[in-house]
Image (spheres, rainbow, N blue to C red):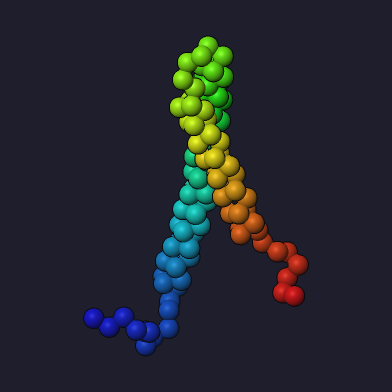
Length: 104
């Protein structure tokens, strides 16, 4: 099966199909970006809540003389996950930023 360039010129139907494909790709990109934002916010909220709750449990356990290292480690891991998520978000925004000054 030959998949090289065509011998005849593209017609209006081909142009319409290409335009629809481009529009579909743009919609998919916007939808994916929106879903990533929602997932990032849900993850951030869950990590913040878990870190806060584990930190409070560690403080209470330490005051009562019970083992406190496990909840403290969970809190630390959640804080590190939250920090990773923030760094990833900042890097992605910097990479996706578009310069409006034009070629320089």
